[in-house]
Length: 107
Length: 114
Image 1 (tube, rainbow over the protein chains, first blue to last red):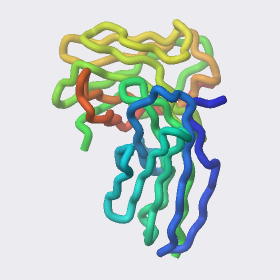
Image 2 (cartoon, each protein chain N blue to C red):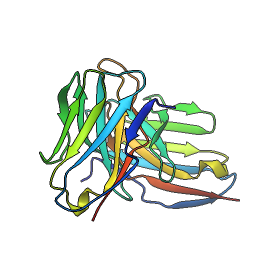
Image 3 (cartoon, rainbow over the protein chains, first blue to last red):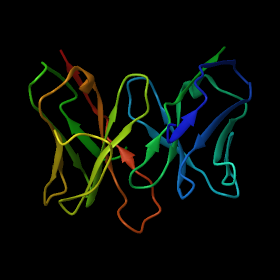
Image 4 (cartoon, chains in turn cyan, blue):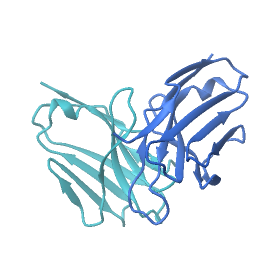
């Protein structure tokens, strides 16, 4: 079993749509969780950290369920500029990445 | 802008050769990590250096080695290159022990092994 597993995607959605990504992790002792965004042929960039109580940053909402070892990312009112690969990340110094989910937002 | 730079940006090598990739940070961080990202995959942790010593390693063979220098720049060395080593290699500056801040990546080096 992979340490971090994500929806394989790809997701193709129209502008304005709401899209949700899911992720599960295997190490129950994990303490740090993040979502990174990676544009084509670029490095991953931090989108947001994920906290136990859930957190929101504008149109983005991240949630963590420690009991189920499950992380989610919700994007509301999708924009064309949201098109990217979204990477679920677990861990702090030796981060473990999921394979990523590709999102394409179309006009 | 993460302040992390890597060189070269692209590199082509043949199987069996050796390669050295470089990473530097504008503001000097004493912890640096290296990751390998194969096409269509997420980055995989190779190893981390803290104060010039290896401080954690992922599931990579010994032919992947590294160095960190007193000025906090770092190198990743790969010996006896294999075709599967073709990937994007990412260097990340770490916040250091005790910090809750996450890692920030450099632009990466694209290595192609023929």
